Image (cartoon, rainbow, N blue to C red; front, side, top):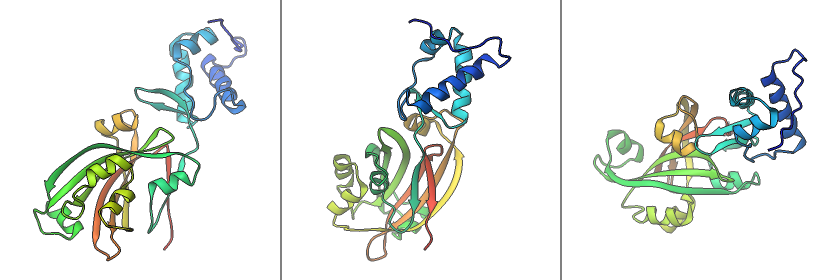
Length: 245
């Protein structure tokens, strides 16, 4: 590759900072579009005539500013504006994402059956030991992982949920196939924690990064709990907005 350098080594400004400012100008000018992957470190090092460590420091600074986003195992990307995610009585991932001109999708990560422990039995208002379906999903917007979630449903009410979700990628559609035409959010509890290893792999986050945790209960039209969810949200990609009631 032909070396292209805009650096002034006599300017009294650290070389890594000059690289940072040059890359920032490239992004602002549209040379790198939002959501696009940045060239590899080796390619950038050749462009500026520096070592990869210097490039890495510039990229780290841009990532800290939220201009770039590092997805573990995938590379470094120009960060899009965080997705605004309103939480209210009708919280629907697909509708929220589509409403912001992004393409939503859902992936089935895993599923199992288990007996309801005391906490889940209380939340779902079922007897202790009731057979539940546990579903792990990954919610994605424009190909970018946003939410890793674990949900529980009473198996007797949604016996084909796993297959229906795998086909549609939509919880709303899968519930409709079980005869549950609508549902509403009873409550959402929001906390924060450091990402765990499995979620880090799914969300493309480095270990030690924070995630927002949403624990929610959804009710069917008769007011009966139908779904318990514990969702882990990539904190730098989504802005949670709690709507007034």
